Amino acid sequence: MRQNEVITPNTTSQIFNIIRKHGEINRMGLTELSGVSKSTISLQINKLIRLGLVEEIAPSDTSQRKLKLKICEKVGYIAGLFLGITKLSMAIFTLDMEIVCEKEYHFDSIQEPVSCNKQIIKYLKEVCTKLGIPKLWGIGIGFPFPVNFKEGKPDSPPNVPLWDGYPLKTIYEKEFGCPVLIDNDVNVMALGEGVKGCTQGESDFLFIKLGTGIGSGLIVDGQIYRGANGCAGDVGHIGVNGETIQCICGNKGCLEAVAGGLALARKAEQLAASGASPYLKQLLDQHVKLEASHINDGAMHGDFTCIQLIRETGKAIGEVTAKLVNFFNPSSIIFGGGVAGFGNLLIGSIRETIIRRSPHLATFELNVAVSELKSKAGPIGSGALILEHIFSDEEFQTTVIQNLDA
Ligand SMILES: [Zn+2]
Image (cartoon, rainbow, N blue to C red; front, top):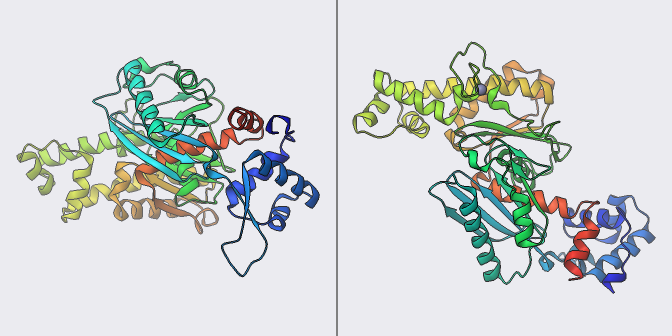
């Protein structure tokens, strides 16, 4: 039956995706949302039910009598992988993005791609076997450095040069026999935040990762905006007014050189060595290797120099972010990464600077917040990346044939 089913380009996938994104919905609601005639809806619904992708259920609200439609979320599973320098986060999702399994694995380092990916493939196969999943419908992978999205390969990744051009997409597609997409970490984190974080339902927002380095993911009209060459959002190398600190990119005064995790660790060492911060000096005297997080600890202990440094860092981040607000007019700016964990003192200073430097029309409803998902944003975003792809109008028919006719 399934082999003979004719999928009308766009309409079948359109109806399926409305049900998938909306959740339980009756036929009348579906007609209103899709703008498609009742008879077409009926035809498409029957088709999706015969395919085993949609089912009709009694409404959970007993005062309503009409049957509701929902997707058969457990008919297939996808995986979201998120790779860091020393850690892999992995999650398996149903087709409605419910997590059925989450795992974390630690590496000494991901310097060498061949053995590292052999290990990751082994982990993923073990998890699928344990869950009784014979075949994944798709895999999304977040990678911590620049990625050639079309080709699915890392592109000149600093720190891990052996990964340059390594054919990640091809290797995983061959191993798992399903579509695979690779994108850089901030893009998938932005997507994750939009799917299950604090920007659900928003179509134009910005996710800024304040980690060892600084980068951002732009969501425009509900989609990741990659730009002409795939490197949109590289905000870490925008200059901060009046700053002259040397950046690894060769320029001076970049935001990353002022407010990135490495830059802050260096500042912490200087403030400890000079004695300007009693809290940091005390740690240095105990031979503690100072990191950016110690500045936050110092501020929590009332160390004035640490408080002042967080305020100044927030001001620098706010200055660059204000330029982005003026240019892009997002509804939200969400901060993630270790430095974003500094909390209200940092975010307050960022927000204050943005409001001072941007027009009222762009800021009066602007939401400036810290990621709710934290480390979960990565694997959730990687999962969302591949899920949107396999159910896109272009891929829908292939997805159905490859997975439901098997
Ligand atoms: Zn730079």
